[in-house]
Image (tube, rainbow, N blue to C red; front, side):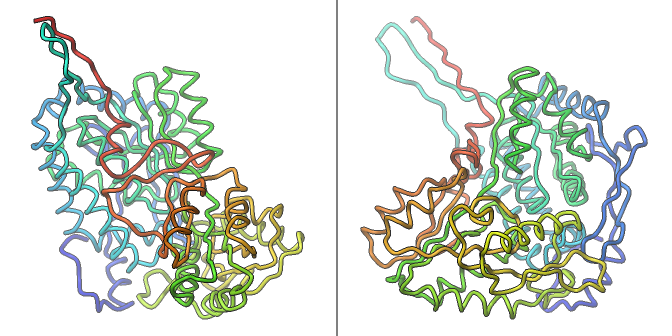
Length: 502
């Protein structure tokens, strides 16, 4: 299916009809051409109904070698790193145009492979993807090097040079947003890329690779390698000809990539990992209804499968009942259903195995003594898909698993505090440090608490807001390095000093 995006009044039947007509890519993209690989495949299952979608080529060491070799040829001998930066930028902007033109098709692929409601995939994720390629396309020709002041008999130059071949290993929860956050700055810097999508969501990434070729990226500049993490991902992590690796995913897998780098060529590894983000509501919040609605939206959006999800609601005792009751009511009324239905507000979890893991966290919360206020069980059993009811627990103690471990599902842990200082202590009592939210009308309180919170991003009187001009990433076991903004280029460039005696 191709063509420009359709009307916002598209019906359930419209999306089902397009899904039936959709062509599913199944081969790697290596050196600018589809590559079926050695014959091994894996099954992509749609969480909307548990049915197989496609048999996709399964990459291993041989396919990883081929993809990295194609990227190396394109970097060492191809035109991409040698193009004027503005010309690279124009190619990225053409890719942004193609993403916009094929927005419905890409949204359907995302929805079918990982369960995101199709209207959210189209209106939120694909807008972000196109905006990312466009932003870095516009930035590419505006970067500058340095000429520091030196003694009169010398000239010093500090230049940014592309690091080389980049492996980008991305997750399934925002399959194209994460791909764009990694590949766009790397490509703008003049690097070549091997993109490894999650095995649950390879289809949208393979289609993105084809659109990149259509946009005029030379052969080998962007390669897409499908496959399982322990085979394809590990092969890239250990590959001696990969110069840098950028990964978004679990903290456990991030540790593996650091080990792979140590065991191979000491490639730099940039990690955006898990989170257990606190969302703090003080009694002077400027709009408690909005704070509660945002808390509910944040934990249930994208089925709660979001590293920055505000999964710990820290609420002041004076307003706890009012805020939590509003979140519980929203959890009970949220419409769960087929992600192709525009009326659906929350789709299925990505796989049946992942739902079992989330249900395991719910069972542990029961055993630990937390109080269930909403949800806590599977939903829509007749569909064949791994649906789950939005879940809220209160009376969550600081040492309970639900307060400490990332669930990556629509499960909220409510904790009550009495003072801002106590809220900060609870918030920082975590191995993670990805994001935090804070609701207060007092400017001094907002500044003091934002500085005290150990997180890469703090949202005040909002959540999940901000543009490409600001960096994104975490501290502690949430990783290191930054996506978005001009700072992302630091991951994909080396600084070279040239000292010239005059």
